[in-house]
Image (cartoon, rainbow, N blue to C red; front, side, top):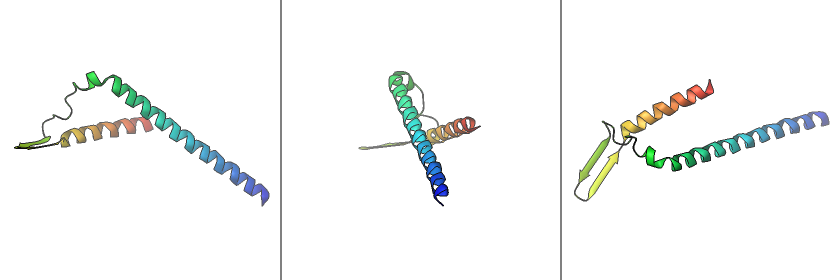
Length: 88
């Protein structure tokens, strides 16, 4: 019984270590992407996302509403394809 407990502890500690490593990797990559986006903001602002045909924009007196639904769909499709390619 003692051998089984030691083995289980070793397996669980390895799984915890891999989980921590995965979270560190996700945070590191996310931070690098945010830094790259911040440095490239001048060029990223020129991309016409947010003003695609089909985006909803209502302007009334004292009120403005903008909902970029087509932009959200395009970004969602692009990210889905990217994640699908990375998982292959």
